Length: 249
Image (cartoon, rainbow, N blue to C red; front, side, top):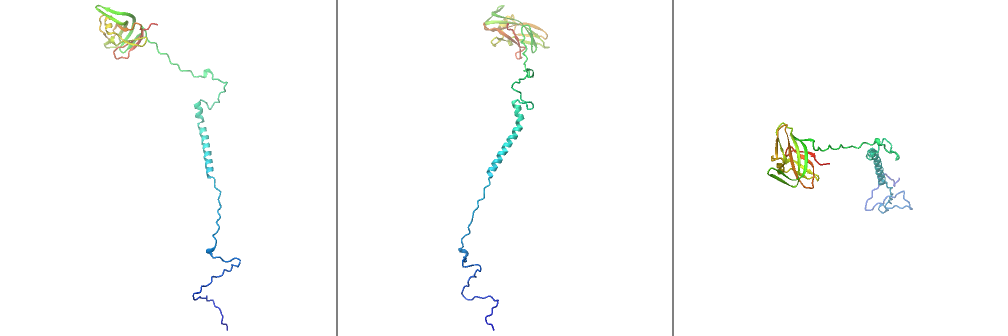
């Protein structure tokens, strides 16, 4: 009879005794078991990765793009630049020894000379009247008619003018509204009182019927050393006037 038989029932520990921890079958006397909380921390090895040269590549790309853009812009603007400097892209540049022929040069524009100013004896028109300057005499110190005498401040110049009404209505010609220009371009108005004496008491207004002509004397008081170069005649006080040259050549 066997008294120490075993069964598969696990042993149950009763009491305060603490069971031993199970023995690791892989542990040896040369390699003792170390509790986890006494084990040294694992060694961490940092491996530095090579840096990517993104900044250099980006800068190189920007420079390549700028150079390509500048070259394209020069190609596009080359015809315009040639036109600005006067170079024809279709024809090769002329050699220094070649000179343009005189026939190829464009003719310089010429301005036609102004028409000559009408002179003594030439008919001119202003508005409703036609004038012809007949004569000019200067140097008189005074003018006399009947009991009237008019003395000049400098010298009197008397201009004989034929006036014709070319309008279909009556026109009043004002002697006071006529002018003379001296050689130094001074403007002188005809003298009212001297006109009265020179025209033998006729008022300084002449009424001219359509188609009629009259001859009047216009008197200008100018300095002794001055000379008259032109006469400015008007059909009214507000007309543009017409110029007649009376200077002696």
